[in-house]
Length: 122
Image (cartoon, rainbow, N blue to C red; front, side, top):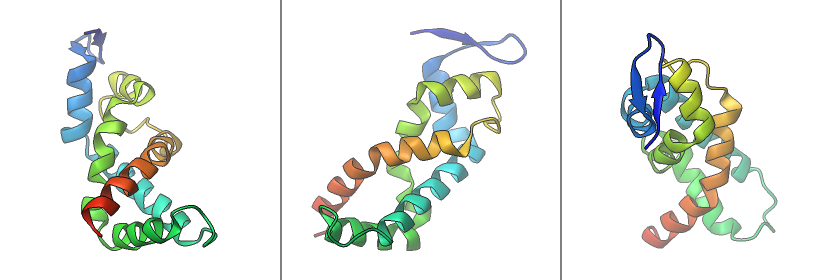
């Protein structure tokens, strides 16, 4: 486990930073929720011929109206992204994490999340 030095010279492990991102960094939780809604709206507007469009659209419609819970499957992937961990290490408020960094993580995991969601929501 690596130790990282955060503002003020305090050492924290990457795991500690990731945990903080997941549970204590409201700014990143908000960014993640908006990124999930952004991904869902893109799916709502995609070509109906897109592979697995029916499940994708069902998830997207659900995610937009249930964003307060729909973002949660993405929370750990965001909290464990090395670039995001480094930025929060440098600025524990999370304010320096770019929207694009969070959107990248959400977009990278959206297929996995949809597949799991569709299995549990036939």
